[in-house]
Image (cartoon, rainbow, N blue to C red; front, side, top):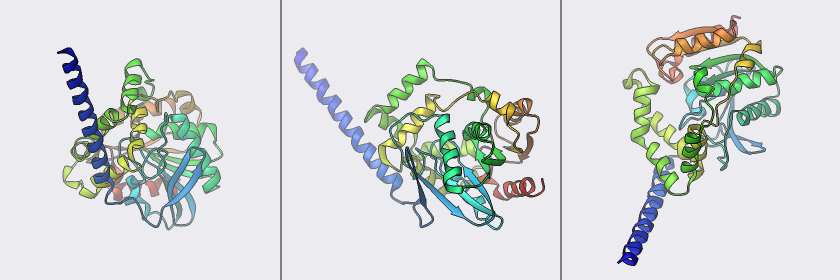
Length: 318
C-alpha cells in the first residue's frame, strides 16, 4: 500500500510539474506575441554582462532616461515624454540589464551593478556630461553614480524617489528564501507568472500607478506585460533580486556629498511622497521639489504635459 501511495504521489507531482511547465510556456508566449517593444529605433550596447537595449533621438545637450525597477518596467515608461524634448536634447532611453529587451542573465542584480552600467553607458555611448531623468527605485543607484563619478552626470530629475527607510532594508533570511524560491525551475517560474499576469498588472496600475483608473490605456498593460516576459524564463531573476532586497543599499553618505542640481517630482497622491522627499532634503538641502496634482506613481504616463513643463523649467531656466 505504501508503495502504491508513493507511486501515486510521484505521478501526481510529475503531472503537476509538467502542467506548470506548459502553463509557463503558454503564458510567456501570450505576453510577448504582440512584439510591442520591437521597433527600428532599438539599438544595443554590448556591455560586459549582456546586451543593453537603448534608443537615441534628437540633438542638443544629452539627456538620459532611466526607468524604475518594478515588474514590467522598461524605457516604454517614458514614451510620452521623449518626443517632446528632442528639439533641444540628444535623448537616450535604456532598458536596464534584466528589464525590457535587454539581456536577462541568471544572476543577482544589485544597486552597484546598475551604477556600473549607467557609468559605463554614459562614458562609452553618450560620451558627454549628461543630465538624467530617473524614477522610483532606480533613484538611489543614480545618486551613487553622481557621487562616484561627478564628471559624468549634470542635472538630476527624480520622479517619485524610493523611500530612504525602505532603501536601507538589506536581505534577510526570509527575503533570501523568497529569492531562492523564485529562482527554482518550473515552480518558481510558475509563481512569477502568477504574480505577473494581466489581472495583477491591471491591479498595479489601478491601485498604485495611476490616480484615475480611467486614464489607464490597455496598451500600457500589454507593454508592461511584454517587458516582464521578454527573454523567457530568465525574466524572473530581476524580480527575485528585487523581492530579496538585493537591489537596496544605504546611500545617505552619497546623498549628503553630491553637488548636482536636483529636482524631485512627486505624484501628489503617491503614498507618503512628501515625507519621502522631505527626508531626502534633510540630507541634501539643495534638492528642489514639485508635486503633480491628481497623479500617483507614474505621473509621466498619467500627466505627461505637466511633467514636461517641470522638466523644461528646471533644465532651461536654472
